[in-house]
Length: 382
Image 1 (tube, one colour):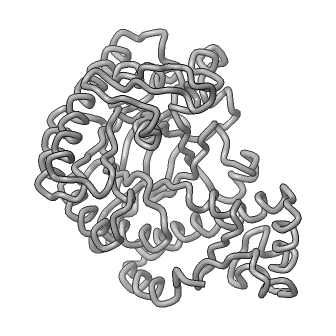
Image 2 (image 1 turned 135 degrees about the horizontal axis):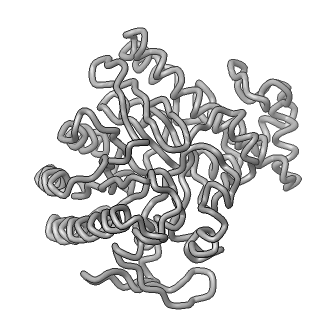
Image 3 (image 1 turned 60 degrees about the vertical axis):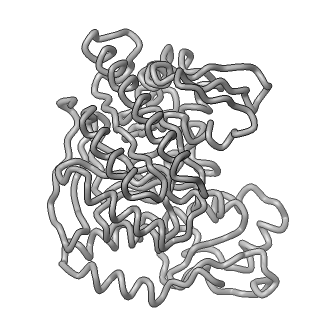
């Protein structure tokens, strides 16, 4: 493990954990939500706005940055932090999920994945080694091992095949990562980079257990759980998430990939996860959905045409302190760019403030009361 990377648990309330993640580009208090900056930017916001709303760590997308502008160009600029001007920690995914989502444009083999660019149709071949090298050039603080994300529903035989392929790729990802680090390869732009392994196995506890055991045997710096929130219902996701996280090391950060409904974040913190990411708050903001303490509202609805209240009367974000629902509806219907900015500011504030409230409840030993109150007041229906 890099000397500039560390994880320290400060407090536990039940299984919910409050800790501190140390990276080469700063400290992140956990549990933490990472806004998704696919192309090296969180859509509709400047980095200054992102910092002001409370974001400490962002996620960038290996697949998209590899295609455009190119990881070699980013490396020549000094790495992703310098290229995009973000001073805080960054995590890059391996590209596995994006290739999973391009099912009609790719072909998977044990060696890797042949795929066609969604930009111009050009052909690419991505292997575990190649994904590791790309992330070394990007220089994020946390790099992810290359994996195959299992769809849902899926047979146990197919989930087993996919899980074993992910394990093969994990071994190759780790071997290449260690080669790069130990040789002080010029590929890397962040000598303090660490690598997380990814646990797969779909909704089958036996496969999840095997995936955890074998991934731990490979020996990553920390571990993530993938393959959830891909179509299964919430009860199944919570059950498998709770089962899997209990198998992961207590003294390492635990990252649940791509899970991001507000209620799910609360439940998954209750299970013992520390890190989260999801496009939901930013994507839904651009589509006119705003999250509030009582649930989401769709600002384009006619009921808000003359509504002079802020989106959330309890919210202290810039949007709620200065603008009404009526005005935000007007901006959205007029297709003004400002609508995306103001809506995104609010939604990210809501998510990051929810994580702050969770952390505070853990510190006070009142997380279970917070959890129950959250579910009483937050409704997923408008």
